[in-house]
Length: 228
Image (tube, rainbow, N blue to C red):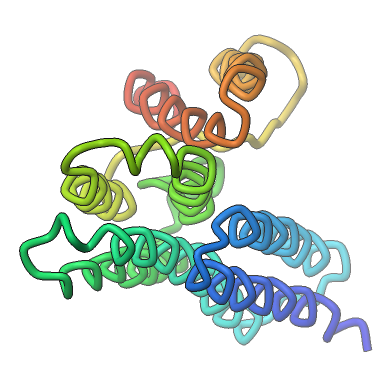
């Protein structure tokens, strides 16, 4: 019985991603973001439960990647697609909104690389898909009105989407919030990052999560040699 627990949790992640996609296509971006976050919680606990129960399996690894691409690839792509579709008057060709789903494809590629890359035990190579999903979900959910006021916002977001696709598969080391010990030495970057998240959330609300991911990328790039 216990061997099915991690896979059940993974399926809850996948279902959360499906629900997030539904709300994204309905234009209810804050609810879509909520279910992406719920999916991330399930994603955290499926791996933990597999390790605690000692029931890791190849099928669980494949299922986890599939669920992650739905929740952290397809769902944020759907949020971006719906936003672009609502602002399609800015585009010379309204079908260009479908370019948002390129991000889902790159998320799948990122997850496949992660499964095969043995260098990512203590950190990441490239932007993790949950971080990318949180960036897009919180940006559009939290700053929808502001984005709608921007001229050429569709072009700005499409350019940002292509940049995030690059970051997903780029050979750029990024730190993970994994601690071998709780001391300051050796964890300086992690503690600086965690402490700096607080004012960003207080000042920006939901959009603060997008700022946090941007700050995470900048901090990772600036401290590359210390994170690998």
